Length: 148
Image 1 (cartoon, helix red, strand yellow):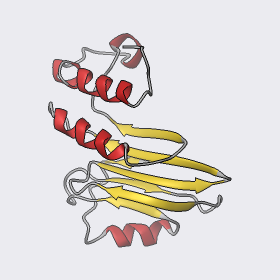
Image 2: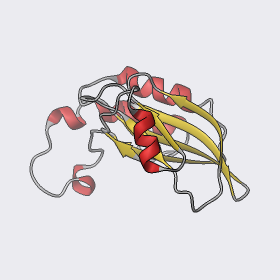
Image 3: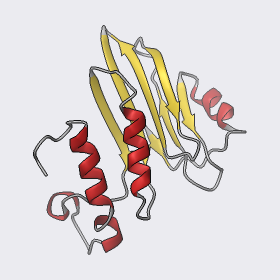
Image 4: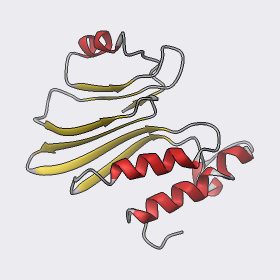
């Protein structure tokens, strides 16, 4: 899973050709955002369903492999406070049906400074506003029930 790929829709086919295997792109522009999921050709999978965000911020997909149904989400969250982003993401995620959910990416925030940050001060914009939105969204789909 890649974030900030800075790949436009016009050249995403070139990236896919260069990779040579299955790939998904959510492109915005060659100078901003963009996420991708690159699949290795060494394991058998079938992509069942996808949602590609128009703003290059996330990709969701259901896939089947080895008898398992998995939902993958690759996320590149905005730097600024944007609760609508997480609401939109998790609203779409609820439409997917994988037995297991794998969420990766760059959330542009720190949930727990003691656990998630080693050096330096943590800018307030990274934790102050986005943390409640993300925690609510995660607990609402039971990824972290009762932890926060």
